[in-house]
Length: 191
Image (tube, rainbow, N blue to C red):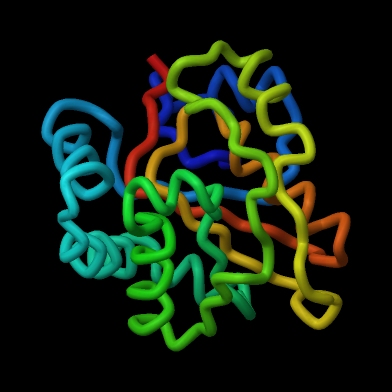
């Protein structure tokens, strides 16, 4: 009901993480559980220049969650930004590619420069939960006035603890967003 993780115990509303901590985002959705084939696919998308995967992921997200996204009256889709150094190294931001494809399919504007990553943070996958949160403190900066955007969808590739999306949502809410929703390709399970 909060982050979008499939639950081990179907009688529960929230996963273990969401039961223990409050998120800055309103609600999240994810396409698939981050395991085996999904891990390999996202790895190729992110590190092996398989940019064409963005369209397929976006089509699948629209099939699975398009109704949810539309029902939230989303006014803008924003990709989680990469720091300029990491973007230069990789050549592209995979979240931005996904956001642009989602925007085309849903007819929702995509803003790629509304907020930026001002700190070149360490990769989250190498950190524990507390380190992830500290790693992202003041990592994002809003670059434009967003008061007119009340309902925002933030897109990323993988959701593990939610620290990145929480930091992004907190920055956007501080700048005036009323509700920040999230959507990812892969998400950990609650087992």
